[in-house]
Image 1 (spheres, helix red, strand yellow):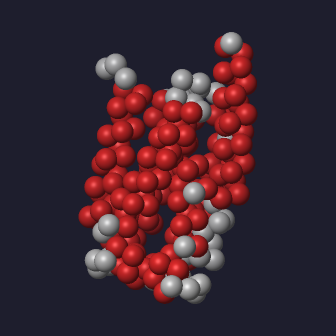
Image 2: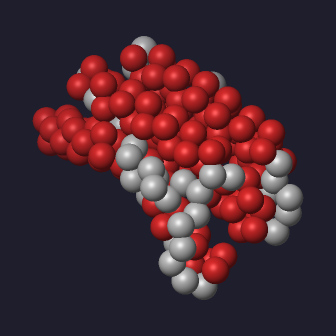
Image 3: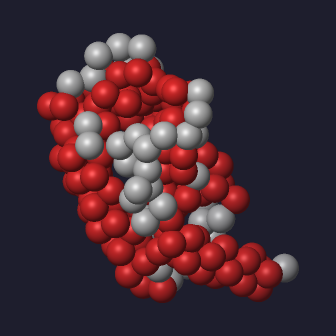
Amino acid sequence: MKNKDILIPGVFIIFLSIFSYFLLGKIGPIVIGGAGAGGFLLYLKTSYKTHFDTSKVIIYYLLAVIFFIVHVYEEYIFGFEQVASQLGGSSVTQRDFLTFAAFFGPIMWIAGAILILKKWPLGYYFLSFFYFAMTVAELTHFIFPFIIYGEWQYTAGVATAALPLIPAWLGLRITLQETKKIKASRK
């Protein structure tokens, strides 16, 4: 199939946006779908046609996954489903939140690690999607209090939202360096 390296991530973003809508309401496609789309743009700018040695970033990726799971635990403990309900304007149950964030999310990111290690095109997309999700989308936690309360207040997830950012940022930095080297060598 021609252009599958573009088509498969695109179909995945649509599926993920719809799936997140059914579990999290409007906030799902905005944050999750937005991260998928942002990751797609990053993928096009970095590793779409510039496959590099992913062994240089896999440790940072997996550390960020671990920190993401810690973050989801904080969201669970402090009731992020209530935050999602307020942001999306529809009821999000704890079960639906956990189904998406604590079950589907880690499975998706660990499956992504396999794709990354195999150096498959979808793995390179997952890498970019994850970087964008952890370095941009997770930071939306810091604006949620202003949207909900009109001022700064603790909301579920704020305390650990930046944890995955550090290893994801380091992995992104290496990705940018490696893809830049490969592109420069082609000129």
